[in-house]
Length: 242
Image 1 (cartoon, rainbow, N blue to C red):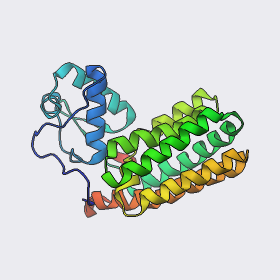
Image 2 (image 1 turned 30 degrees about the vertical axis):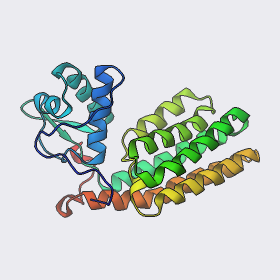
Image 3 (image 1 turned 90 degrees about the vertical axis):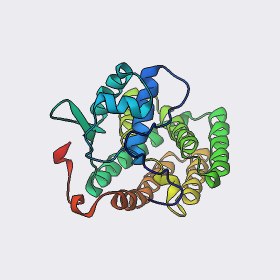
Image 4 (image 1 turned 30 degrees about the horizontal axis):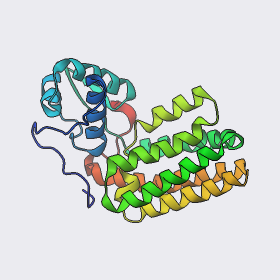
């Protein structure tokens, strides 16, 4: 486990959930976070009751969370009314990043003429907040700020279908990799600054190329991260078990 990363939960120890949103939204957020951080072991059989104990919640919102995460591809159905965490291989991660690079660079090019002065001010502020938060390893806060930064740009493209697909892909990725591996946080935020500079110049295609490079540079960190977390015997697996 990389330095600063949360220690995986053992047995049925409770997993902390944020204290806001509906119970179903809380269950979805808490369970998704536990899966993506590796707090729930891949292939461990899970029942509604066990997950409810882990989250400290009643079974009803947990059932809804399981349905949502199965639809997202993070959980898979097993025999005897159990589910387990879907395993992602290095190839899966590379395939995901190819799609992200294509879609997010396209969204950036479309968005470039529509980003307002208020948007730029907010984007600058988000980047400053991430730089301040990075040394403290507050991964949840960093992930929220990073998502807002990217999606503010992509939302300006005014293409709801494109934005929906991008958001769906984001839900399937372990975003802590942006902050855990040495040097990645500073590199990522420097790349953000370069993207903003291109957008301010009105260079939509240049900004799109920088977004593509930003995603591609993150790909190698992501593959390294997923390889560390995956047992040697399972590294040849692909989508077949999802």
